[in-house]
Image 1 (cartoon, rainbow, N blue to C red):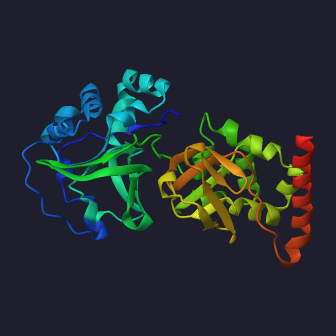
Image 2 (cartoon, rainbow, N blue to C red; image 1 turned 30 degrees about the vertical axis):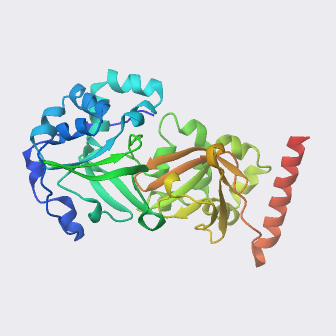
Image 3 (tube, helix red, strand yellow; image 1 turned 60 degrees about the vertical axis):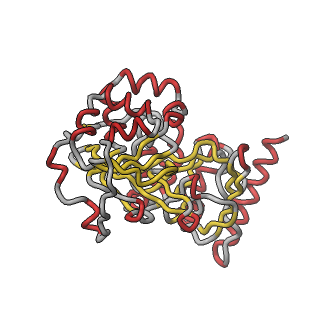
Length: 336
């Protein structure tokens, strides 16, 4: 998915103003003594492809001589793990390359002790005159730290003009848009037009455009196609809202932060996460077919089935039983 409407922020000495984290009340940390600049340090850490990309994009001199900067630095393996076609596009299009790289850099020295869960750190990438944030998440009691879903594997590598935190993936796609807008960008809307229609019918657009953060388990169009009487369900706002909010969890849970067990949804009931190692992740009866699609207000995981909430109480019980029975029969008919 290509970045849309990207403008590259001009990295200059003006960025040496008081660090962004001061406004969050985070304490600054004394610099450790260092004898190498950020580019030299990256080379020493074996980040050859990152250094090469900085040079190719024309950013190496700035990163080397100005600052201070904090870099979330992908390993060579992280670059190799990108889809081949995207790697080709990345190094063919220097504007795109510079955009992706500047998203990995923030102004000032930011050490691991200053990171907190759901912290939004403005990167040097500007879109529509606004910095695109890097979202920090901390899971498992501090054992796992991510930057826009990429796991931090080495922290606080100090340079004369900043600090490097090594990460295991390139932070891409860049989270320029919120959940609803992301589902409607070119290349996505063909897969999620039914979900978007359902969100609109349930009156949840404004909610899913809000600050959140939210984790959305998003069924593909193919998943909705298996649901019988879908047009009738889309007309039943109460039932539709219950179904959709059962796909949403409060907070940002990238794959690095998921573990097997029950997770409470916005609808109020639990979904069951089952981590099956190399064979994938299951959410109830649905398989995650693509994980960690970063958005400005959380993360989206693509799934291949619609999730069914447990039986609803009181007045909702009858309509829910009819829907669930129809759904199960539809699945049985499909198998036959």
